[in-house]
Length: 554
Ligand code: ATP
Ligand code: MG
Ligand code: MG
Image (cartoon, rainbow, N blue to C red):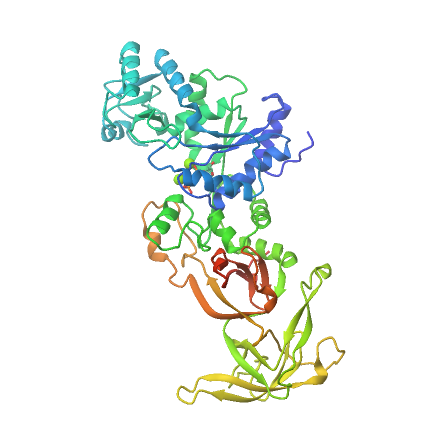
């Protein structure tokens, strides 16, 4: 076999290929529950499952794990389809729903009952929990455990027919109430729940549990390697039990667990993300601060950067937390070669160049991308009144301030060296409102003049610049560690109140006028920015994808 394994899952697959366990097939699936939008953790699972299929010339299904109608919605199905496609993966005609198998799952349940492997139990959910025992205490058998096959068949069919109220009875597997594994203590297979399902409507009032529906869905689709996150390790004996009991022998799917992705400064569970959306802490699932695929897309992340990130983090058998700086590093690397450079002034300070002719406009030549000479050049207008960044001027600078200050010189990128002659202040407030400068006509960039100054500033021409709004983002969480296992809402106390800063008076160079939503640029000295869909009304809105400084320690 030509695949040199780079992780433990590939070692397992290679072994299966060697032993001909699955007749040479590799067939994986990505099984999201449509109860929220996909996040960067799901991207890890998507890249892993579709990536393995690709690597081995196998197949990967997209399957909606839609067995819990109370939390699932069509909106989520559509967003998941969009997001997986956008990430660059394709399932051809293999898009399935666990609900497609409801009839078959019901037939398997009848078989389990006939074989004496499942029974209808009338204990309340609370009693079931009490009877289950604990890790240190064996469970207690349900008084309904030894009902006859006939009675079980009758009751289960009547459960399906809607004769009993919600929650009044369940179907349970008859396994072992003394098992050291709590999942094996007669787990619930079916519950009664009157809820309209997004696909099957009101046809069913009993719904299968994940631990029952999942292995059977895998087996029915001919999945070979059913890859899930580590929390399901303890469920594996039940996965195998269900398949065995339902008559799936050699060649049936096997469950393999890997470590889920955790990221610093990031909440990831769908429940928590939904809370942020529902309580209005963010503008929606696609808020550019969200770790959802749709949020990252709107922020300006590329599918290539996300796939690269998933490659680099690899697949391991124990949980850890990845530094979000690595994700940022991946998008910088990608955009460094792809994003056109542009000049944008986020907090403008007016500069009048007193010795520059009033009505003159020069077209200066700017490189589109110094990393990629083929990217070519564009023209940028220069004139007597320009704007620079407020931060690039200090009236009383400390030593080593190489930007502009009274009497000092700087170079304007692609243009001339200017010198600050005078500061104009608002008479009432004392606020600096304008700088008066002179330029040295001999120093035009590219004209071969060698006079050097320490600082180079970006700028825009006042008469030509285009107004824009720029949204600067910071992490949603102040604390860099979020324990995803904590069920509470404590994370809300750690939310960063300054995760969004909106600047409404920005000015960008005229070549960006009319830039389409989704276009990405590097604003010189600022970072990478992406045109937000809110720009539709004619006013440009940019999202800062990431700053320029890379904090990823390689
Ligand atoms: P969450 O806990 O975030 O709500 P989930 O596991 O309940 O996610 P599913 O829709 O069931 O969400 O997930 C679909 C697939 O994605 C599963 O196989 C799951 O193991 C995987 N997955 C979910 N979160 C992560 C993660 N953080 N890292 C890697 N894989 C993940
Ligand atoms: Mg799940
Ligand atoms: Mg979940």
